[in-house]
Length: 260
Image 1 (cartoon, rainbow, N blue to C red):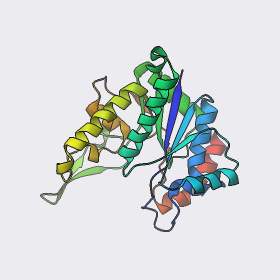
Image 2: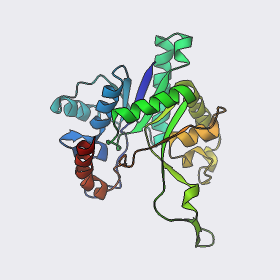
Image 3: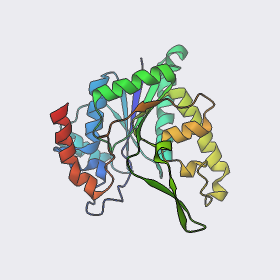
Image 4: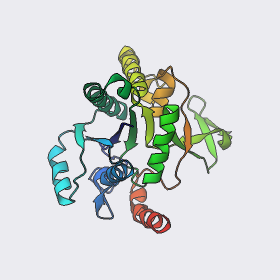
């Protein structure tokens, strides 16, 4: 089984008010957050071919971090795009080209790719292997969780909100694992649609690429394949987004290590 991992570490982390360093490069247990995920992918499946998306002009800083933390896991870096969807598409194009140059057609059509947000450092080897196994059988594996809080929808036109049944909704996590060819085809279509609709980019239609916030939503709308396959996520697989998340992250880390 051929497996690639695409770790997205190109964001600015603008919702952290008290840290100027992008959140994915802040330290957790004396190691940059992004490196935690890379290590887990390598431990779970040592043959994983790893790509890491970085902010533009961050190569030198990344090299310094790798040297400082003795980060010797084999990987390839590339510059991210303006938005998450652009960063993923750039990475998928690089991986697709790599696969077509390295493997036979029969091998290539079964290749899997995990797409993971670097700001989720609390994944583990068992979780990754479970997702890979499901994607091998169903072409996709999307980790999800049920909602705990009550939710409402907000109608901007009327300035009113309406209560919704939380049991009808779930949240998604990463890594999300796909058959490479199928997710690449979906992103090609999303890119083409975005170019055609660029003169109407102010329209916030949830079906348009500029309103798609994860890879499963791109796959849902632009793939002709079967619906995504859902897998139980991990409650502790949080995304470090705010200063409070980062403040709490060492405690989460200790809790996970204690109960593994």
